[in-house]
Length: 313
Image (tube, one colour):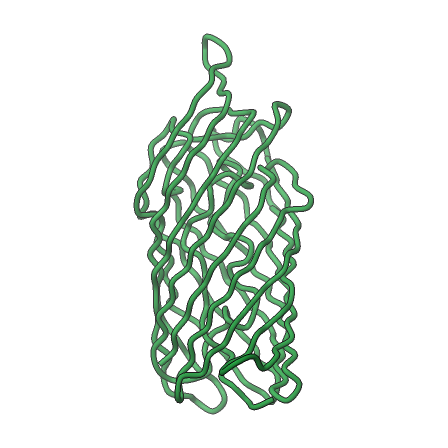
């Protein structure tokens, strides 16, 4: 197989997170599948990257699983969330075998949430629907270091509270807090055989939501992927999988954390389908992945569907 530029971009998700997973609202800024396969890595080619992403999530939880939402306590949750993200970044000329990039992603979010909420008069059914700009992801630091078939990565996504947020509302496009997510990883790409794999881990560190006096705990997330590339038509078809582990390692705090530590966890695995099309010296890459959650704690349980498209020039 001919060598082809596989390291394309980093889809570090701006806050499409349906705000229903772990931490306040049972959610965090980091979404499983954000950085997993070779399409998500810091580039190792000077120039520009433009990327669009569509993310769909559906999940639910029974009456026994209560979650805190903007000052409310909710159960019997059912949520659907869609987001379209548009972003890009610039990669500077190499210093030795290292490439440094900066960039940002802006999401537009659509959310529908149904739940039973606790009120002074007893349980009440609520349905909320909202859409709007979500929390922007800033990428002030992305570093990829090449060593033969191996690449070592370090990046610092910063999620800014730019999305609309309202206390007492189930559906909020924004989370009303900053999150800093230092992440490191290593990837392997054998251009001769077409086999590639990647392992990344990071920590999402949250600030306080001052509207609810709620500070979500720190989350540890790890993702593993493997793919085999096959020559198909003018490009290469990639078949593989993406597995993730998401664990809140410190408890929630503040006067608004009425359910206590509320440490959530989820694990899942699903298939990944990629197509890489060389365009002269540039590359166009599309990827589709389905990531069902297999086991959850203090969260909704559902499925993520990602569609990513990247052009590097």
